[in-house]
Length: 402
Image (cartoon, rainbow, N blue to C red; front, side, top):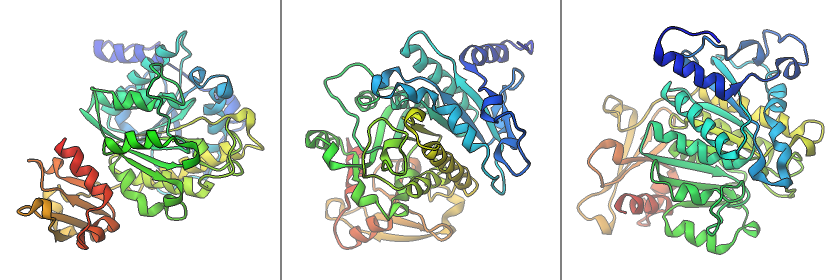
């Protein structure tokens, strides 16, 4: 291993060499060179002397760990390299972001060790201020994805896209179908906002929904989101991280999954979701989990995930830091004032970007601009304008007053 002579950098390089392994490049490329019009031609793979990740726009990280998924989905540990095979053969985006493939988290003796390695590597990537795509593996790694953000911020907003709500209150162990309780109980970082996007009611215990509602979090049914995904762009503008279970997509579009279901998002709707994630300046990581190549048919699922990653990267090229909390951007917004009876002396202000059309609500709470402005939808403004506070805004107020 190459050392720089700088103690801090050598420690980082040692950590990366102990925690990461290169993907099988001959396998993912089918031993064929990438053409200049293919994404794989432009990907830089991690080498011993690369430690300044800030030179890159997006990092890619694989997790080949599935033991917490149980026997039903152990083979999802094969997913990272299978997804790479399809992703790197897609045509480039114009302009093409600079991609750094860090390889895969090394196998560990215990699942908890894998969590620790993933958390450490993600924490280092975040400090280099670039978003990361995580290709897994089972969805319990959402906990490490969440915990690693504690290295750069005290509170985290999370969006989870899944057909089921993986909350098992009585279970202490982290599993792929019972990890949300660990996010709810976290103190560092704290969970500020949670959106469960696309859940299906016949897979959902109403008591779980009561728990989510009592904590002023959001649960959005599949029927609300289908055919109208762009309306929910504020969900992903709000999120610091996004975790996606491939089971959110119906079986005919994504057969490579352990639990088959005829209903769910369509494959193009997953692409819309990931594009919104790419466009959001707040999203620091996106994880796509539970892909099982053993159950796949003619690579339909890995191709679908590859396409969704393409759209994440395309969305990234449209990423801007627009926000009404940035003083010198005030002229880029239309401002609408709405009064609510509960806040007689402090009206709510809704801000609409003249450039993107995105909406924010300024809550009459908090001292700093960062504590007052939150993404919302046009529908939230329209509800308020008619005298009815939307559930999204109501929950934000509840969280701020908690």
